[in-house]
Amino acid sequence: MKRRSFLEKFVLSSAGLILMKPSLASKEYSSLNKNRLVILHTNDTHSNIDPFPENHSKYPGMGGIAKRYSIVKQIRAREPNVLLLDSGDIFQGTPYFNTFNGVLEMKCMSKLGYDASTMGNHDFDIGMDGFLHAKQYADFPFLCANYDFSNTILKSQTQAFKIFKKGNLKIGVFGIGIELSGLVPRTAYGDTLYNDPIEIANETAAKLKKEKCDLIICLSHLGFEYLDDQIVSDRILARNSSNIDIILGGHTHTFLDKPVVEKNKEKKNVLINQVGWAGIQLGRIDIDLNSVKLGSANLIVF
Image 1 (cartoon, rainbow, N blue to C red):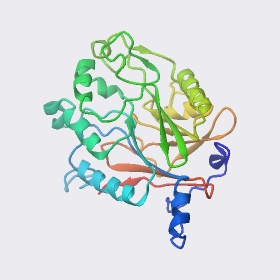
Image 2 (tube, helix red, strand yellow; image 1 turned 45 degrees about the horizontal axis):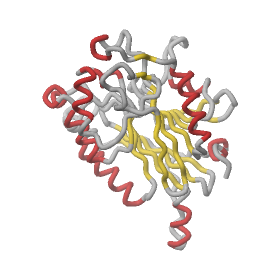
Image 3 (cartoon, rainbow, N blue to C red; image 1 turned 90 degrees about the vertical axis):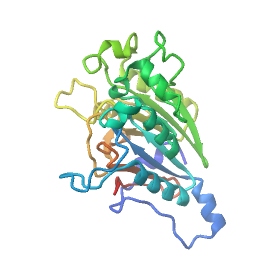
Image 4 (cartoon, helix red, strand yellow; image 1 turned 120 degrees about the vertical axis):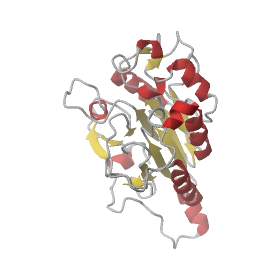
């Protein structure tokens, strides 16, 4: 199947998940599974290790690393091809961050088996030296295509993109960050250079297309949308993009029931998803190239 064609014909099921028929013989099922991918994702977890208290007025008992671990483990037991991704703002928000300076968050995400993350503005809250100290406990890469760290201590500590092989699928993943000026003290990001997110996203996606990726995913911390269209958001990025299939967003703490679809410059579909904040939801997107279907379900973490 030609790359992207499944996204042009996808179906979003109301139940959210595209499941294989149980009557298939195991050998056939195994073969078909090689063309299936489950994308799990979070954003803006903000050091929320524990669930919210049971008496919380809005999110009683929701969230928590242990519950997320259990859900991810169950999904991995059923699905051989899983990517677990994060869209930034891992840090800041609870006493755990103040006490452990990001180390606990990195250890927990490594235990969950995250494949990659990008950086959000709050990931600079203890400066680049603090981030670098915490990062040594991360067993996954940080993808930052439009932050140029060449003149900082984070030089060579991040990468623009990474290509994953899952079954028969080749998936390119890259990260795009928000403008730090005005959000983060200059002392926290130093001589980091901020490059145009749309330009860099398209350049990076073009590289991944040349690498013959079947799917290209952008981990974005730009924010879902703003009243001012002059501010680059995920929706603006999608409309001005080429070759990007999915944008997994963060920053604006937007709860989406299912992915939003935008048309890119070539009038092709781009999916955008974001799952609020604090680990209350775990995003799930199922891609099945056998049946040309795509399903999604943002799972509440109870």
